[in-house]
Image 1 (cartoon, rainbow, N blue to C red):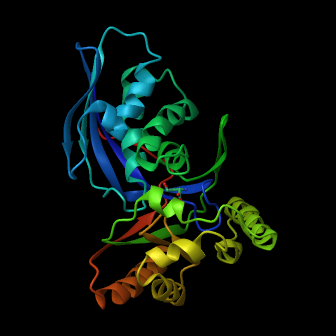
Image 2 (tube, rainbow, N blue to C red; image 1 turned 135 degrees about the horizontal axis):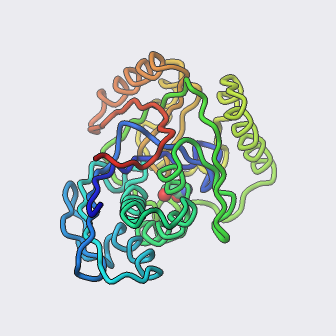
Length: 307
Ligand code: HSE
């Protein structure tokens, strides 16, 4: 096999209470990429389509993660990368992670899978860091592993896979404004009150337990963020009315997807997820802000081969 086409999915990081550690993988939204072996040594970005992104290898997220892997390979050939981007950069649903994951996943497949998923995440972190100016893996891990993941630590990298209850769906609204991850990290406080920390880690533990036991009431009870959301929600117009509308339409919980501006809701069942979609559309269609809206099953497979 000399060439493959892959689907690299969008992801939701943080999942309300799990800033920088929790994430889950989406099904219906993602990028396509083609990875090809070539006689010419090195990593070559031959086509970047969809958004205005750099096509120099060292400046492209997919190129940088591919280079991180290529440096540890001892091969007398190279790789070409084509990217067909659907996930808008700065949307909060893991655009850079999808690019970073796609190149290393595709190369690994063409090489006969010498690396495991945690090792692939290590390479992809280098690409993600180019975009967000810090090394974190809460979008990368769900894109590679699928389902829900928890990044126990980045150094050494330790990723835990968390089961996905079968009836869980996500509704994502993406207001068409751009929020840079680096900027939305810069506004966060350096210290938090102990009482907030206690609430937050109780929620993270409860959410993980709820996912393991398919306890939808407990998912609902745990999907709260008392530390990050109060700061970042100020960057997202109509966040509070959207959240109220989603919860009123039956969502188990609603919060900022990654660093925003996308807003995610988790729902029990497809019908509820569709009702939440209607409710959120109604909020934003009364405003001056354009938006995209998606309903997605949780993708338990992650990045995958298309051909
Ligand atoms: N955990 C990261 C953040 C995800 O919220 O800043 C965005 O890349």
